[in-house]
Length: 197
Image 1 (tube, helix red, strand yellow):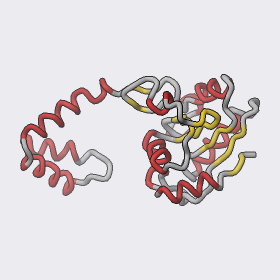
Image 2: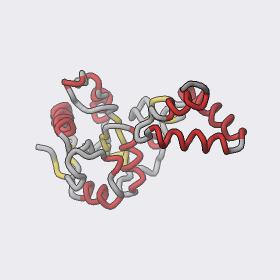
Image 3: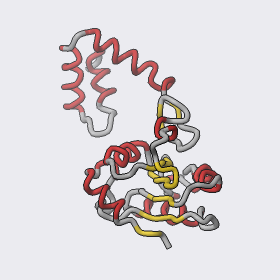
C-alpha cells in the first residue's frame, strides 16, 4: 500500500522500540488530534537539527554551547562523570545522586564496529583534566566488553595525570544500557564505585 498514511507509518516504524503496530496507532492518533498539533510537531521536526548543538566542553547535545550543565555553578567542578551517550547523561543526572560535571563519549571502544580511541572525545577529556581543578573522573559506561575496554582506555589516557579514575559498581546488570537503570540502582552504583587500577 502507498499514500501519506502508510508513508508516515513507515517513518514512525524506524524509531527504536516502535514496530508497525505502534507506528500505526501513533499515526491514527495523530489523525484524530487537532491539526494545529500536527503543524507544531512538523515545525519542531523541521528545525530540530538546527536548534541542537554539541557542547564544546562536555559533548552533551543541547540548545546552547556550553550546555546548561556546564554553566551550572551549583555543580561540583572537581568530578567528571564519563558516559557513553546523552541518554546515559540524562539518566544519571535525573537520578539526583551525582551533581558533578559530565563528559559524553558518543560511543564505546569497539574495533569490530570501526570505533577507535580517536572517535571517543578522549583528547577533550584529557584537556579538561589537564586544565586543573578535577580530582576524580568517574567512568559510568555500561558493564559490557566494550564498556570495560573503554574504561581501561580512559584509565590509560589519564594515567600521567594526578586525577583519581574510578568505575561505577556493577549494580547495573552486565550488558544492559545505563539509561534504563532505575534511580536506586544508579545511586548504589555510584556509592560503591571503585578506583581503576
